[in-house]
Length: 398
Image (cartoon, rainbow, N blue to C red; front, side):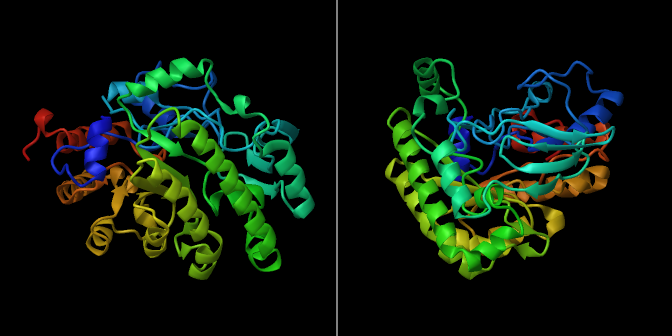
């Protein structure tokens, strides 16, 4: 699968493709169990019950999240059941807080819970995670907070503790014979996404104007930290792709202006990507939700070669993007809401066929499957998509 992945990203393969999923709501899996999904379906990750609104990874998204959240679940049972291909995996090292913040419950009742998460963010949320949390307070409010955080959690003093495997030498040997793409960097590495975890919204927008030197100081320090870690691990193994996390757009488009991007993000992207290129890594993918088409030219100038997951309901059109950016890699872009209707599923599959023939495209839905999609329709979709990406197994007329 690693070889096929690279052939697709290099626009060398335009017939077969990867059989991937992006992710699932916990509530979606609960519904599917009532409609025929085996109730004993298993997951990788901590042994626990999943929540209604929880995001559960599929192979289209990097896993595990060694830096961001070690408690994220991976839908390994669904991957086996539907014969999905292995997805990209980041090197098992913590690029973020080391040590992490302690998870602390501050208050709870029958329905809601207030807590400090492992990112040091104080949140209020429903216990079943039916919606996004209400973020109340972030770790960095001023220069003093930043200096304390940098000294305690964002340095190389405890390098050995940043590896998240029991036996590093055995892990390195495993990677030399891997069948999956190996990711350099990974969530939450990025220059808007990581700032949101540190500073939060809307404070970050004020900081761009009121505290620009602090924004630069943070970006420069994180770049130095991340490049030092990259030096460490690229000396041990080769990598296939870089992955960056941003989530810097909504339905209306980018959350920041092109000028802000060029001043506070582009220079650091160039450093990170320049290093990766020097180690032979050609592909640099960024993850952002929302309408991202207007961001593509800026990211391309910074060295990014592709994006995911291209949410259709936010206004993205992957065929228009392919026409305007013929050498830009597109991952995702199948309208998840279309899975409510088999006729619309067929329309999405037809679109996928056209995209695959143009190269540089890996199909999967544009975000996690919500609970209003039936198991019957999901099965139909998976069979139709498999017949396109694995035509030698096709059971439908092509």
